[in-house]
Length: 180
Image (cartoon, rainbow, N blue to C red; front, side, top):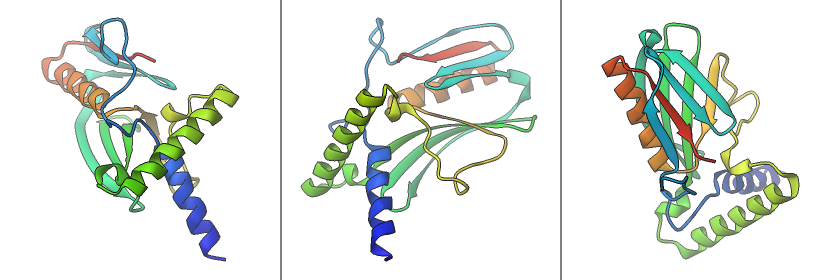
């Protein structure tokens, strides 16, 4: 009986983390060739327009900005940017890469590619952009007072981090928008 839940968790991990296996930093780009836009905005605020929603915070309310990476369930490498505020909320923006993608095992890469194909097909049938959706497993990954977004590639996550840091340190407002 234990084999079925473990197998289901493994397949779901692959499906939820599936993305471009040729390069974890690739994504569709906007007119300017970038997967995002970062520009000056209203003074005193940092604004993020991300897949699934938006976020606006007063720069004087930010208490810390961090980036870290961790291995989830031995299958997924999560890279996460966190913006903490004086209020009761925390912003988490993350990118998921299947751990098999970092290895040299051809079998692992083929499994990831198959999972991506299945995920893409499911998205086409439902009209949902599953690759950009936040993935939660209630109650383990549901955090009270946490606002979460997911981006497809590490380059966009790094740019978001740079935008938020630049705004916070300079005190000049910035708007960061992911091109979908």
